[in-house]
Image (tube, rainbow, N blue to C red):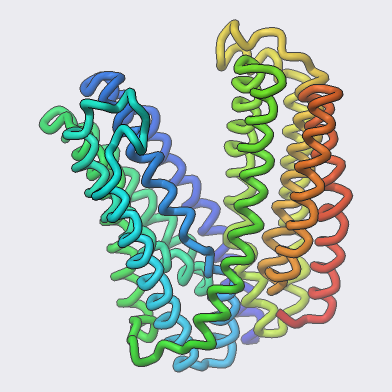
Amino acid sequence: MEADGNATRRDRSIRLAVVTSILSKGGTALLQLLAIPLAVRVMGREEFGLYTSVSLALSTVALLEIGIGPALAHGLADARAKDDVGRSRQLASTAFALMLGLSLMAGGALAAVLALVPIPTLFGAEYAGSESLMRPALWIGLVLFLLLFVLNLTDRLREGLLEVAQTNLWGAAGNLLAAVAVGVGVWLVPEVWFLVIAVHGSVVVAKLANTAALWRKHPDLIPSLRLVDGGIARHLFSDGAAFATCCLLVGVVEYNFCTWMIGQIDGPSQVALYGVLISLSVMQLGFVIMLSTPTWPAVAEALARGDLDWARKASRKLYLFGVGFAICSLIGMVSVGPWVLELWLGEKFAGISRGLLAAYSCYFVAHVWRHLNHALMIGTGQVMSLARVQFVETGILAVAAWLALRYGGMGPMLVTMAIVIAGITGWALPLKVRARLREGVS
């Protein structure tokens, strides 16, 4: 009876997470499609460009978040399965201390850079004369991003508690608040620093509210420095660093490095086209992430409780949804892709061949398959093994993509990338997932 109750709770958490994710994306769309264009019109293109430069520079702070989520979620799932409140408090307190310490270190280093390095040196000679506009925005933004760095820990705790839906709801509220703040406030204070506060400060407010709600519902997760454990800290750091590094390398090679190669060989026109394909990948993968994000913590929790049947069923559902979506994308791209892209982007992108879109779709199918296996490797507690396999794949893919682009072009490069992904993580990771689901140990 208890097992049935836990299974029902996990199913419900996934359904709620998917529904609330749609709401959160709606808030993001409201901000991007309505509030931000309004800010451009009020502030002007050049001043809005200064805000964009500030945001992109500060977004690098987010890369310092080492991704302690996987190890934290597994630890919480195991503690909850054993009703070990003390262990839960240790995990939450240690994770908080770890993120706070990293935030202070990063903040000190970045503050020194802002204080000592001139703005034109950081951003380029074209920014000379804009110091009075950018420097206040950079200082305010640095404080906000460091707060986000720590507060994002609440999102990770919510994952471990199967409460992703709560994070999505607070995220939607933050996006709505940002849209209102930008839409109304930019008329009163059309300044770069205010736009930073309106957009990113609203997110901080939402995350603070989410943290307060979490602590009210789960007082055992309120951090205490006396409960910090060095062994737990080392485990959270090493596990998170391995996961974050391998995932970061995927993006650097397949997005940044390939874009640079295309620019060197084929020029800016082809870079623009590849940039469109990258945007398509990010947008489409978002629909898969809506399901994979709540599924992997639920699988971890099921394994901690020994509910192998539920974990296997959830894994099959995730595979079926993700692969089905990717195949539908392939069919849509090849059949109506050229027409849709011309309608969306204008006549300058007319004439994109179905052959190139078919090559891209092969890559996207492989990309989705890899993401599904990434999620389930995390859910089954195999982050270090995932990192090792991914490091091998990324190294081989970088060389293979360069050779294919150099001697064949963008289409062959995309097909080659798909083959490498399918040939390494595409078969190795599913075998590891299957073995762990058979063994029943997370």
